[in-house]
Image 1 (spheres, rainbow, N blue to C red):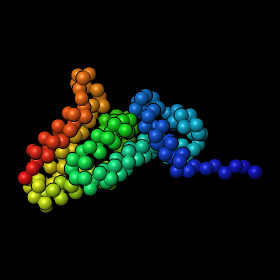
Image 2 (cartoon, helix red, strand yellow; image 1 turned 120 degrees about the horizontal axis):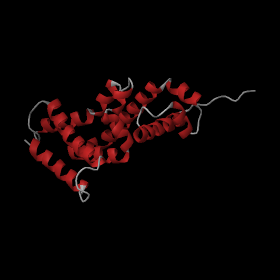
Image 3 (cartoon, rainbow, N blue to C red; image 1 turned 90 degrees about the vertical axis):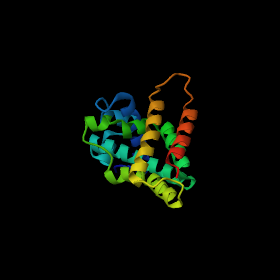
Image 4 (cartoon, rainbow, N blue to C red; image 1 turned 135 degrees about the horizontal axis):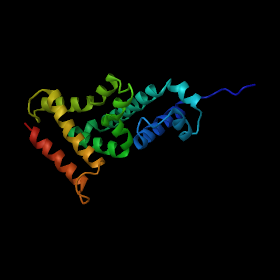
Length: 191
């Protein structure tokens, strides 16, 4: 009697994490489904059964990253814009490989994959809602919510990306730089 093959959520999550690390370290062109299976100590059949192929696996990795990021933003949302900014950096530092895959563009240049539009858009919902809430409360200048949210996102994203790329002097205190930037953003958009 043959053993049933079990491809559970735990294996799926392990494959997503392993793939993110491998692609971040080796680049998407060098990573094979066999590499992913070996790193996760499973069979290539399991990888193909769960994801279909390399493009679908890479898309699942990016989508999972955006879902995880969205959850961290939702958890911080009650604290307002400053808390969202702190959570943005904390998530990026904790998930560096995913962050680079989600925002680095390397995957889109190699294979036909990218985040599902709804998943990526949902990740920014807490920021958009916080901007709208602050404007309604009269603590933030009135302007297009989308423009304000995108401007804020661009500034925090840029600083986090510089930190992860280790640009700047070796003595750079990124936590202080980031905190100062969040304060400047608050002052700059204040009503």
